Length: 139
Image (cartoon, rainbow, N blue to C red; front, side):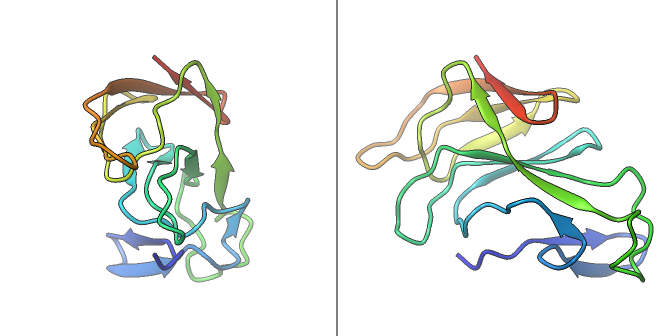
């Protein structure tokens, strides 16, 4: 687990480091085997994984992406700010797992399924929907 995050700009054909001045908010800890899924054009939902202490995690984070990716040549531009948010779970959240699967359902929801807990694999399936930019409703 490196703890870094990158975004690829197709139009420029370049990778950009998301750990610098373009990013605000507290990023997640270094994780491996997480689930990441794009939610419409709003950003990326990150769930689960295993941390550096080899513990499975149940937190969900959201990386919001600016509506227009302007200012790549000037990382200090206020037009370009990516924001990490630790989401508050609403309802019964999925358990701490590593290597969960996920797939976008619509512009605000994803399905989270399977994964490996400490002692066993799980076959549970959950629907997780982003609400108000800082909550994740689980059903």
